Length: 169
Image (tube, rainbow, N blue to C red):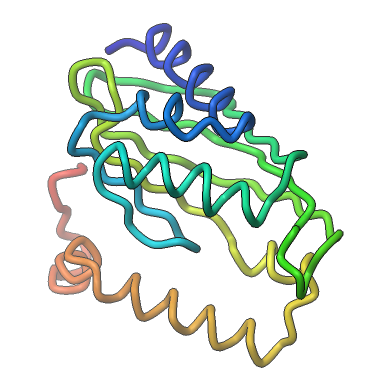
C-alpha cells in the first residue's frame, strides 16, 4: 500500500468511527485483525471490533465523537498517522465533560486493510479533563505502565544492551 491508498483507508476509518458505524469501521480491518485499545483492551476480528466501536466507544463518547487523522505515512505494510479526537463524556460519573486527545497510531496492513492497530495516547490527559481523582488516575497509570513493561517488544528492548538495536534500525 502507498500513502495515497492509506489516506483513502483512513478517510473510511475515521468517517465510520465518527458515525459510530461499527460494521463500516470493522470493514477497514482484516477478518483476523487485532485492535489494541488503551481503555477497552484488545479486540480481535471484525465482529469484536464492530462491537467495540458501536457499543463501547459510542456508549461512552456520545454523538459528538470526532476522530481525525493527520500526516499519514505508509511504507508497504506499515503505516502511521497522528490524530486528534474529541468527545463529550456520557459516562454518568463524567457526563457532560468535554475531552480532546492527541495520539499516534500504528497500522500493520495486509491486502489493503488493517491487520493490527495500536495507538500511543496520553490517557492521563483525558482523565484529567474528565476530572478523575488523582488517586484513581495514579492507579490507572500504574496499570498501563505494568501492561507496557509486560509486552514482548518492551521485554526484548530491555533485554538488549544499550547501543544495540533491534530490527527497527
